[in-house]
Length: 67
Image 1 (tube, rainbow, N blue to C red):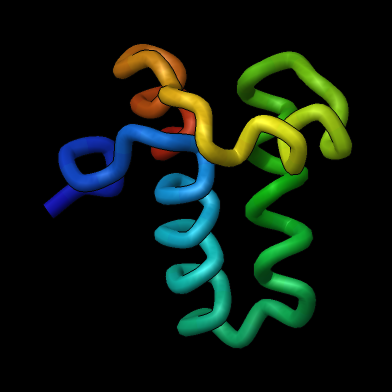
Image 2 (image 1 turned 45 degrees about the vertical axis):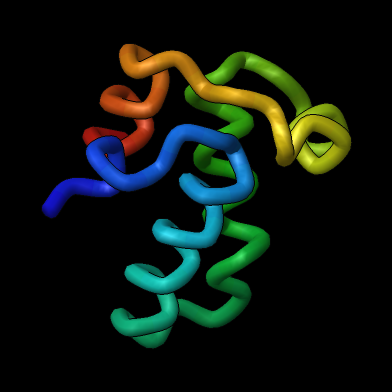
């Protein structure tokens, strides 16, 4: 099942991406997941961290999954 079908908040998207990156043995998986989502959303990482509980649009979630 895709991340976008399961996750609707920034926190859920970051957590799902972090898990996938960690499985691939990427060091700093959480940080990288946050940077990737911030890039997709067009915001700085600190702004993303402050808004982790916010809903992410289905379009942005889909673009994040494809990123």
